[in-house]
Length: 425
Image (cartoon, rainbow, N blue to C red):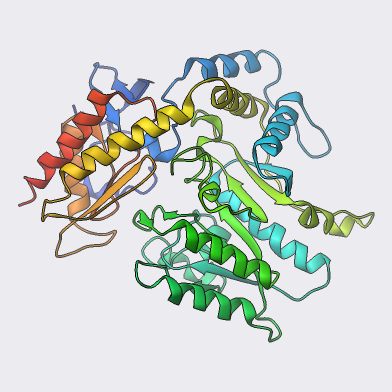
């Protein structure tokens, strides 16, 4: 089931020097991936956290097909189209009232870049010298330069350190140290020296994804939002991974009663079918760029901003959320994940079992923990040979499947995890 595919492609986050096989996938349906020979893998990580309802969802595929017959692409600078207008209107309807504006881009990283530029542009245009960005320890926000700058420094980006701008880092609010993180944020937000008053604080709400599926409580997120509001610091919620039900609610911020000033969405926005992202903001951020002075224009775009086909896919996804029992599926998957995780909770080889909504994770006891753990490549190969797509973060195994995964498929995933613990030596 691991036929090597020879190709000139340079794959992301892949060390080709290791010679690991790269399966060539021909089609997908639901939670399953198939190669041309009919071999099958259960996609237990939603193909990098994007596929929500399942691969090739009929309603989303139909919307894409229909849109290809009407309008494929349109410059979005000074022009518009119905799929984008409908999507923006629905996004404004389902998000909190203070979020009034929608800016389109094409990936999670670019949605973060847009958010940072919105925040800095806001302070610049109102004439206040604020340019410092605050971030949370262990965070990850993408792989473009600005997104890397506000993420954790380490193996992900050490080759590009000269390109990254300086940020203020708030400790991760680990259990028992929540107040330390809040005190650090309070102190950073209160800094009034010239050049040190923060412009914005960016955070992954409730769970840090690439940082190791690190979970912190909703009350901490709510308190962080309050601290930022008290000091006029813009609060950016990066819900690229956490949005669209992953944490158990449509948006993670909902669990904390938090309304961000700027909200980043991507991945599940189209159900995972097409690349698309949005950055929503409150009216004052937009108003700071609104002027008869063209120099105050928000100068950001990409060629494929608000691509009509991608917007059609997103509209179909929102229709599914409106018309189908998506929340019930999320709740059922969350319960099933909890049950499977509990079965490993007494295994001494698996530490810190944890779950948030549909996301479940555990850490394998290893002498070389961390992202470069030698365990990860061995586990990936082990799961691949057993018909499961899992991609551990170092010694952290996590399961984040599409909501339509069947009970049998999920059981196969967790059986593979249990078997891998028996084959660690």
